[in-house]
Image 1 (tube, rainbow, N blue to C red):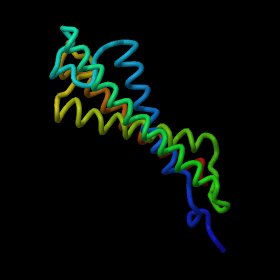
Image 2 (image 1 turned 90 degrees about the vertical axis):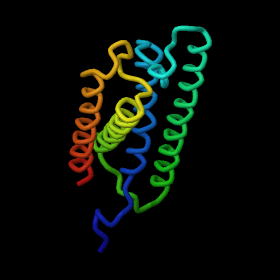
Image 3 (image 1 turned 120 degrees about the vertical axis):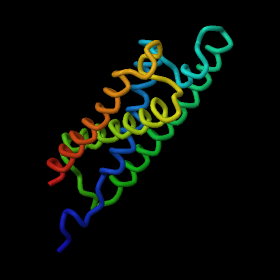
Image 4 (image 1 turned 180 degrees about the vertical axis):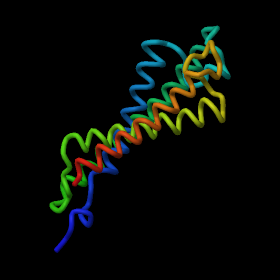
Length: 155
């Protein structure tokens, strides 16, 4: 008899979808609404129209990446749901997978763009600050919370 752990899961789809949606949240909230930074604002300050244009182009490439992650997540979800033996989790578990993906986005993007490459910071005018560290911490919290929710709801 096949156990639940032997059946395909929608966890990978939820995590990849969470990465894409987390990127959209970051871009919409921090880049567009609050205008705290753009993808390259630490390297190309938005102090002239030409620099602002370069920042917008960089943000556009960033949004293409988040869109691709979202499309891949939807495709993985569609594929998993079309398999008869796919284990369907609870709604809370799927939300957990989305949160874990969002957390992975925050952690990886924060480490690479904020800390390693110094492309931008959460609050650009402050440079590397506690907000960049809180951003990383939010990633870890979302990953842990998401995996706990995913595991509890999948059993």
